[in-house]
Amino acid sequence: MNKSLINKGLIAVVAIVWLLIGYRLVNNFFGKSEIMEYQAPLETAMPENLLKRDTFQLSLLKRDPFLGTYAKSSKKSRNTAAISNNPIIRTPKTMQWPKIEYYGFVKSENNSSPLLLFKVNNKLHRVRKRGKIDELLVREVYEDSVLIMNGSQKRIFARQ
Figure 1 (tube, rainbow, N blue to C red):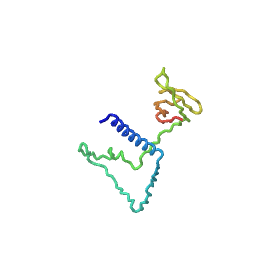
Figure 2 (tube, rainbow, N blue to C red; figure 1 turned 90 degrees about the horizontal axis):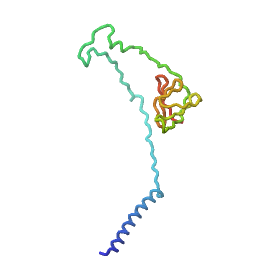
Figure 3 (tube, rainbow, N blue to C red; figure 1 turned 90 degrees about the vertical axis):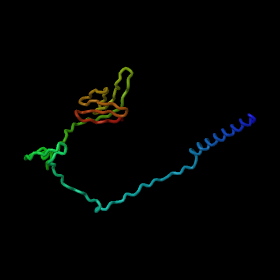
Figure 4 (spheres, rainbow, N blue to C red; figure 1 turned 45 degrees about the horizontal axis):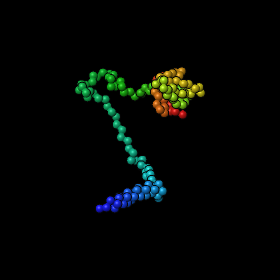
């Protein structure tokens, strides 16, 4: 066969492939776009009589399921001491958190820990990781937030 005939055939095949690629590319950007609408299913109300709660009373075990021994019959055993009618609700002591705004950090070539910029009670502070501002301790530094401890309480503040 003739080389020029083979070259012309290959050129024709490559041209057809590029035309198909171009057609698909143009069709994706400028073709008709059908917007499909999603309709959420309507919430159906459950009748009140179908919602029945099953309640029951748990009794204390007399036999230890792990050791196989029986509990001593004393007036106050460990199991009865743990369960009481009036549980004691301990409210944690709430510490007053000052108004804190976190503006971000700057990394330095000389120091490995970043320099953080805070506004605490409308006063600007620059502090590094593990540094203190009054009673606040900067615990962890992330790209978009920082973890601050006030005593035993923790809070995460996002960058403004």
